[in-house]
Length: 243
Image (cartoon, rainbow, N blue to C red; front, top):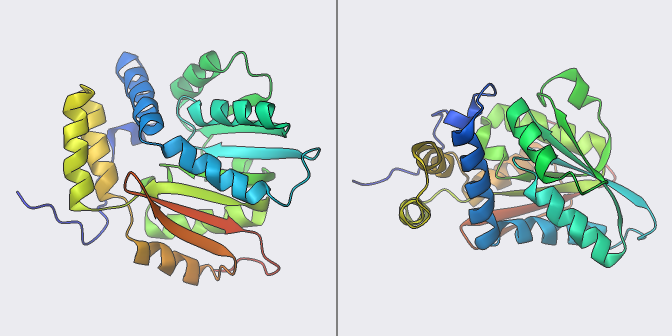
């Protein structure tokens, strides 16, 4: 059956239910993290952070917020990178699911510079949070276009250095390849369904460019990366972001 990837789907994902908990969710979080690591997804986000850090003195404390942090694997990778390279990071994971945050805290208990907050990013508590760099690894596609524009404006206003977006390229090829991965990694039903829906909620390059125009971004790059990802790096400019 042919896969129509012309437009982003509005179909919800099972994991969008913030009240989910239990073994099936934990298994899904850990396998998503494992696949992301194996396919170089975390490395792609790390490269974006490294790019933003180039002009920043290493002795400056840098606060990095990870939106939709999952089991915290990206933050742990950043903590290791910072330790090995002499950076002073304050790392904060944000997720609206309390069970997910609890799982991430258990996995990160040895990392003293990582903390987690269970909150909805559309609520006032998050919207007043200030940071230097904000990350969205496989998170932005969960939102509709109008929500994305609103969130990106907020991220830009509250970040002092910049934004790193790492998200899916919507294509029939990536859809079929993920079906193969489902078999290889023996993903549970929720992971299979959500993964395929995620791809159909992913992006085409022109859509990210349209967001950039609407947001009047002056200093940003969009690059296609393996495995069917877009790396969107936004550096703070001299003018405020407008919608």
